[in-house]
Length: 58
Picture 1 (spheres, rainbow, N blue to C red):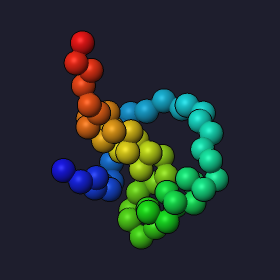
Picture 2: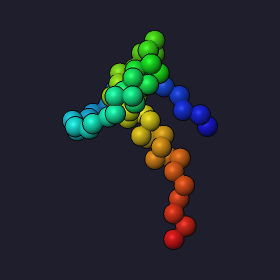
Picture 3: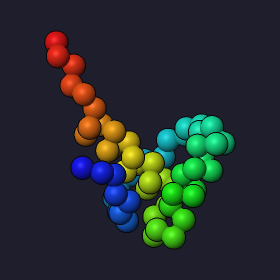
Picture 4: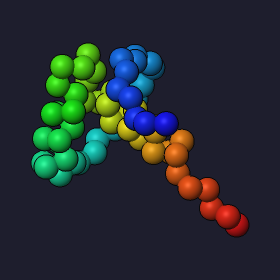
């Protein structure tokens, strides 16, 4: 399944995180024209990564 950007608003908590400028620029380009905020994109990308991580075989 491929990653798809979708609008989403849920209860949240603030966290501070630092991103490399190059990554910020790439994210901004990816979300341009898609009704989604930077934060929402990052949340979706993290959820996708967690859902698709290889499971430890232990």
